Every structure is written in C-alpha cells, then in structure tokens.
Image 1 (cartoon, rainbow, N blue to C red):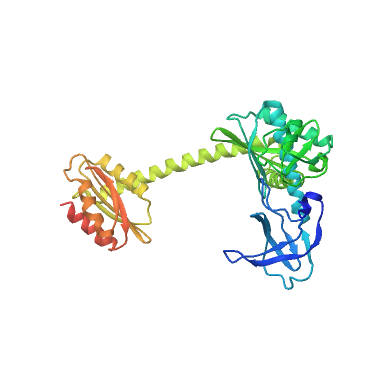
Image 2 (cartoon, rainbow, N blue to C red):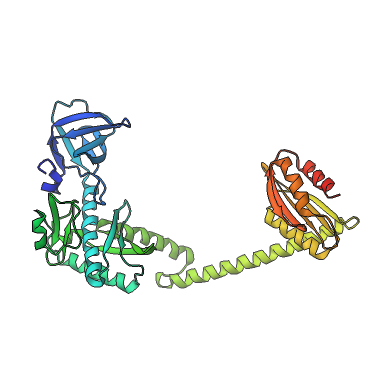
Length: 396
C-alpha cells in the first residue's frame, strides 16, 4: 500500500512520482502508471479523483489488474523526468465529506431502526443509499438525520486501521467485509465500525452537515437521497433563489407559498376545464354547420389542415349522433402524413372498417375500428384530394 499516497494521507494535494509506463489501452485512450500516486481510483461507490499530471489533465483513474491507471487527455512529453501530480482538491474534499456522511447516516439508520444499507452511490449532485426497508416514514428519516448531525456536531474522530481477518472479531462491524487481506477499517469510535477503501476526513465535524432530500421505493428497498457538507449550502442556495423568484411571481410571502400555489393550480384546472368545454361547444357548432352544408346527400366529406385525429373523431361522432343518415369522410393533411376518419349514422349500411382497411395500403398506413367508426393514418404518398376521392369511391 506504500505507493497509494491517498491511504497514507487523504489530505495530500500534490506529489511527485516516476513514470513507470505510458501507453494506450484497447480503446486507444492514453494512460500512465506511476511508482506512487495520490489519485484515488474509482471504487467502493466513490468516484475517481481528477487533476493534473504535468500539463496533462487526469480525466479518469481506474485500478485494473492491480495497476492504477491515470487516464490523461494527452500524453506526457517527457516520461523520464519526475512528474508533478496535483489533485483537484475541491472535488476530493467533497468526496471525503459525502463518503464520511454516508457512513454516519447509514450507521444512524441501523442503530435507530435496524435498517441496513445495501447500496451506495456518490453522484455529482447528490448521494444515495439503499436501505433494507420497503417503507420509510418521514419521522424515521427525521430522527436518523438528527442523530447523524449530532454525531457531526460532536466532532468525533474518524480513525483508520489496517487489520487482519483474525482481528476483525475485535470490532462490532456494521457489515461483513468483502476483502480478506489488507483490510481497512474506518472507525468513528463508539458509533460506527466499517470496512472501507474510500477517503475520509479526520473528524466528523468536517462533514459539516447532512440533509436528507427525498426517498422512493426501489423493489423491496428504499433509495434515499441526501447531501453533505458544501453540497448542503449549494442546495440551500439553489432552493432559496427559486423560492425568491416564486414569491415575486406569485406575489406571496414564503409562509403563504403553499396556499398560493394551491390556488394557482386550482385556477389552472378550472381554466383548463372551461377551455375544454368551449372546444366541445365549438366542435358541436362545426358539426351542425357541416351537417347543414351536406344535408342534400348526407355525405359529409372534408379535408382539414393539421387537425388532430382526436378532434376529427369527436367531430364525426357529433355529426352522426345528430344525423342517423350521415356518412362522414374526413382527411387531415398533417405535414408529411395523412390521417383519416370514417363514420356513419345508424341508418346507413356501409362498413367503415372495410373502407378504412382498403384505403390504408395506398398510404402505407395503419388503423382500425368497427363497422360504424374507423380511423387510421400513414405516409403522404397521394394527395389529400386523392385520398378523399378514394374513400368516397370505396363507400359506394
């Protein structure tokens, strides 16, 4: 472990090293092997570090077959000289805060409710843990968050110990370790004992704060979202900006925001309902006009521009409901496709499903229906006028 400087001191921000190898992987990506490194590779739910090696940007770090590969955006110019490595400290410390916070929150849930953590992911915006419970209450989440923040406030030490498999029995581990050699324990005395290969701060106080954001059921577990440290301030800042914008837009103080939004949603529903009723009335008027227009032979045939098939279906039903002798043939010319609706009143004998079925192959279309009402659509392989004439001829 001597070449893994991040295990010697997680606070190392820069270091020098000898280049052991520089080459491309199977996908043509440049990577470098060093005799020692402070760059943490992806593992155990924690993302890799980023930073610089000389003038090259380190964009990925992976441990493959025991080698820590530093993937870089361009090859190093001189591999014979020592290279200076610099960690992106803002990201590294953020990962340290989030990972330690995960240990604290997971231990809190287990101690309070015996909810074990069975999954962990450290994302760019938030952290998630999968808790072994199907139902998490708001009260339980609140209590676990309070205990976690109490542990942070007490600024307890976070210790690291390397132990053998035989020595594990001396510690009340939260879960069984997967590795059998070079076992690394991360310990918050009298609170949490856990096997972990990640980077952590020296004390819980450096986690700063933990805030639970949300949770949802994932199969038989609960996936809980939270943030720690500087991410708490970032989340607060984002939400505060949004809240201030909403108070201005809604002309309501923060404490009345919920009621103001509720009123707005109710008004929107009322307006939506009124608009739908108005559309229905307009369609009914349109249906009457079309019935009057074609009252002589009762064959209502029209071409529309960019009308939805749902509107045409309603219009056809209004016509046939008020005129049992009506035959309706509608074609809608919608950009690069044609849509058709055919309907009949109960006094007529034509089969709408048959008419639609025979016409759709001419536009490479699909559709369906029954003997009194059918619809479909397809490509604009013929003109709308030709389609209307075809439907008219098939109805004879």
